[in-house]
Image (cartoon, rainbow, N blue to C red; front, side, top):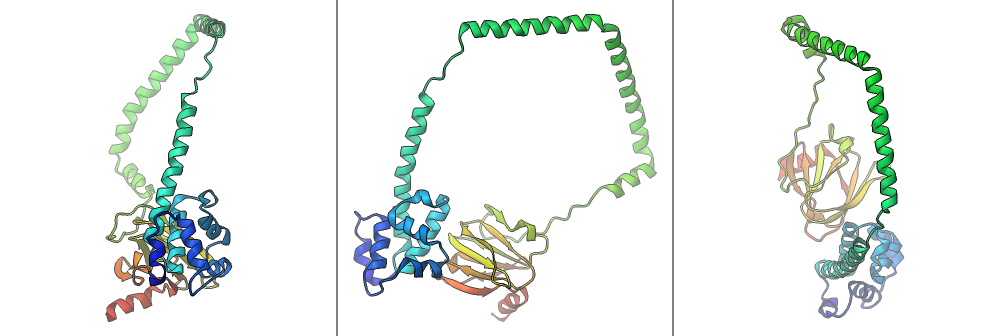
Length: 291
C-alpha cells in the first residue's frame, strides 16, 4: 500500500469508485485508464465502470471484487479497503432488488371464474365416461394381455437366476463392464469449491488452487489465452500437459502450485502481481527438490 494515499483511504465518505479515480488522476503518478487496462489485462469499460460505481456493467460479483482488488493494488491503494466498500455498496443494491421482488410476489394472481371451473370439471367427467366405456367394450383383450404379461415375467424370474449361475455368462458380463479410471487428486490445502479445465484432468501434471481471491490468466505457447477469470478460495484449474503454458497472477500469494500431486508452494508473495510464470512440470519439480 502506498503512503501517498493513506489519508485518502481514511475518508469514509468517499465511494470505492471515487477513491479509485482520485488515486489514478492525482499524486505523483497520474495515469490513463487505457494504460492500466493493458497492464492488468482488464477491459477499459470495466475499469471505467468501477470508477463510476456502475456495477451492472460487470458480469457478476466475483469479477467485480477481483477486478477492483487488482485495480486498487495497481494504483497503490489498500485492496481490502476498496473491496469492503464495494461489498457494502452491493449490499445496498441487493436490498433494493429484494424489496422489488417481494412486492411482485405479493401481487395477487387472478383466480379462475366459477364458470371456467365448472367447464373444466364437465370435460374431465366426459373423458372418464369414455374411458370406462372403452374398458367395458374391450375387457376380454385387456384380460388376455395381462395374462400374457404375467407369463413373460414369470419366465424371466426363472431364467435369470440360471443365467447368473452359468460361469461363462458371468465371465462375459465382467469383461464387457467398462473400467472407469478416476485420476488421483492431491491433498488440497483448501476444500475444493469448483473445478475448471476438467477436460485436462486425466493428463494434467500441474494443478493450481486458489487459497485466497486472485485473478488468473493462462496462455498457450503461441500467446493465446486459454483461461482467464477470478478464482476464489477452493477453486482449482487443471493446466494442459504440454509444458508450454505460461501464467499471469494478480495475487501471486493466493495461488498454490501442485505438480504430480505434490505441493510445490505458492506462486509468489501476497498482493504481488507475477507475469510470464512458465508452467513446466519438470522445471517446477526440480525447483522444489533444490529448496
